[in-house]
Length: 526
Image (tube, rainbow, N blue to C red; front, side, top):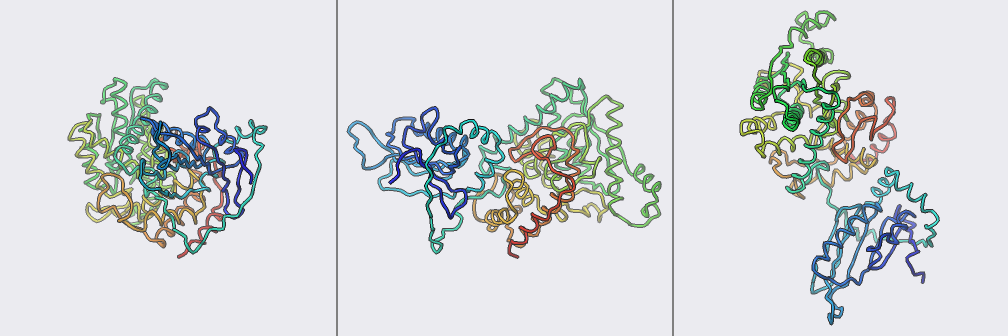
């Protein structure tokens, strides 16, 4: 029987399953044997440990296994000795845990009276894709090639398909948003300060002390405005140097305009209103649009005239006041191409929201509102903005009700942010994304939800709905929107889910075809 830490066991029937085993203190050494095994291709690292327990040792084991699984981009399963060992001079707690790339998937009860079995699903494809993305992992393998002389033994796992347990792995509905308070608070703190520090550095490097921002009363401009307020406070600059403008046009609703004014006043920024209707109407007259002759034609030209007029005014205001134009677009809109090229949410001098998805922005605003850092009046209006239907407000509606609901066109942001994360972070094929999405979203009563998620938003989606909107995502993301992402303004990367900047995580041709993704998408059952 082959034995030793120089052995790799490779499954012939399970892709990417290569197992390596080490013993106890191997994981305590400066370079554990499994480090070289991972570089040689091992994805599942095992440790059978005779480790006794002392006060505080459990936390140290966790730290070692977590860090080692993350460095090796592997799963690490650790099992310490437990009940049955002699306690003449030592004690044993039977600690067992399974980590995957730094994430704890399962843990045994310590000091249990009976033997235990813990189970977890390891996503081997996820590990393989992460290793491809992590260039330094391959570099390390090349540099240590002389040390990777492992004996390789093949085996056939032959799992009993009749006893398939299904997917026991928890798949979070919101991969950009943690499900527990402590993690969400820490994430919001970090995201908020990453945005603020990015803007602070840009202001310092350009030697500017003013910003211009358009405030619509919607989510994105709200987040950008409160980031600006925090940044100016940190720089010791008066908030009056934040030149905020609400720019109503044909379809601006009373509620959003009122909220824009309430927020600007509550934050103490310089606030003005410029009615864009005359400028937009003149443009429609100049280009001979039917609306100028009284016809109710609300096409893309009608919409983009408004977006273009607003952006033109903001840039000229920035020229006049020697200021920087702050962007108000977000990652989700950029992924779906839900922005007008060169104007609107697409263009600015600096976009603090550029890598923040829509599902996260809502929690960032709520986090700031609940903290009360800008006062109760500002908190109240932020909560009102969170309760407002997401709409571009470019087509006149019935009274104060918006005629457009963004999610009717591009799909629920909850699903599209899920699709975005697994496309850009792991490069998964559509059929796998749909499988994970269906597992996460099929039952509203199952699993955890992010804190403070309203009851009305705790919904379920079945596979046909998931497939439909995934198809929309594929076409918009791969075929129709890359040219917009190839020309985005600067902005800080916030989430490990990635940035779509062509200077960073996402470089792609503007004339790519979605055919390979759509071919796999067609495999998803209807």
